[in-house]
Amino acid sequence: MMAGRSAPLPDDYLQELRDEIAPWLRVLGLFPGDVVDELAAAMVDFLHCRKLDAGSHTAGTVKRVLLELATDSRIDAKLTIMDEFVLGAFFGEVPGASIELSIGGGGQHRRLLPEGEAPFAATFKTLSRLGDDGIPSTGVVYRRRAETLADRIPPDASPGDLAGFVAGLATIVLEGAGTSARKTRRIGSIADRLVAVGSPGDTSVSSALGSHFAGLDLPGQAAFIGEIAPPCLEDAAAKGLSDALVRLIFQELLDHVASSERRALLRLFARFFPDALTGFAGLLAERVELQYRLENDARSARRDARRWHEAHAGWKLIDAVLEIVWPDPGKGMGRRERAAGVEIVRAMMAFFGGGDQADDDGDKAAKRGSRIRRQVTDEGLQSAYVANVANVSVNREHVDVLASLRSVIHKLDIVLGVLDRRALFELEPNSSSDPAVRKELDELRCAIGALQLWRRELTYKRQRGEYERDASSEPRATGARVVLPRMPQVKAEGMAENETAIRKIVAAAQVLVPDIS
Image (cartoon, rainbow, N blue to C red; front, top):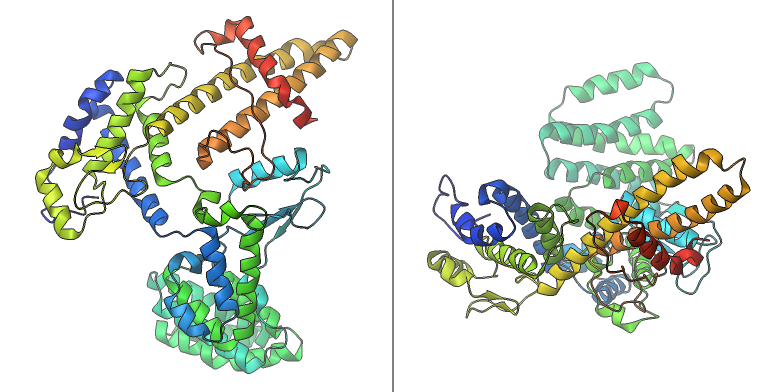
């Protein structure tokens, strides 16, 4: 974490940070020893996310690079110089296309999603209830796995090319990342698939091959794949299964590929199936245009491609710090408390190397210590050695927005808890025998649905870093946007017993009732 220092770390290298943030923690009623370790862990995450942010591109740039590959004969040269961010497009990272959701089974409103429960759930609910941009909901959402590079292996590929490709996969595993045990498992998985087709039903043959494979060292196991691939794939070709077998082998490898192996995999694929790779690059360019709505909104081309699914590193750090230093969002976070949060984040960024100094300048900054750190401002690091770049300085407005989001979500949780208990224990038992109670229960459930939608949208804004004040016209990853009500001026303290406050919040949520019907 202290990359700018060459000397060994002291036993308590966080003491300087403790001293720096102690006055601000006192404003929040905390002692440095209570939170400094958690803050350091949050900073590790920040530095990782900031590195990813620094390596990202705009959606327009990603599309352009993919189109250049799709239309250029110098495939290997293009792959050699292609950076890691664009390489990620071939492995489902940009635009995060592991899953496709759509209304009516297709069309230009398809949503491409990464693996993960949160974005999938948010998109499914939005498409099923609200529809997509300009497309009404039908109540039905279609889900399918997005096409992968493995699906592009040509069905008419020769057994010789398929065998050479599979042997190349084993070599990449051998020379790639991971422990010897992990490499053995991955190469063994390839061998098992080949042997299963090459010796169908003959357990003596498969057993002998398995025993032979187990007795080889890693280079021998990789060479073994090269030996058995041609005859096994010839047998598979006779049954019309050769291309399907190689797709299965390749997909299993793609599911667990290390980032350091990606370039080698693409170059191998291009060597045996160049037209398939350029065709897939063209498909990815179309996905980027569809996902980021480039045709409908020219500004989206200038948007950071990571911002579609990920909040930027600074936003995530502020949210993590508030969770640590102000864990109870029900306590009003006033101006002094929010200012203290700003100063804590500022001190952390500076202590852990807030600027992008060169090595020599980093050593100078470390020697100058807190003097250079106090020069970090909302406009960036005011230093001759550091440019004003994103995620270098803390944004005061983001602190305010996140504090407000946490507070509103907390109030909605209180109201939902009260209404849920009322529906379950007071109204539900009598609803079947009393029509008036049944009507009241139906109305209450409608109000609960509106409040849940409100809460879900706010949670999405918090997770994804949607901090713009007016973003109603901007496209977003999960489907149609919802215009949210304002939270009435009510206090969270004692709200569970405050019927007036609860009625105000329920009344504000009524504008969302049409969106849940």
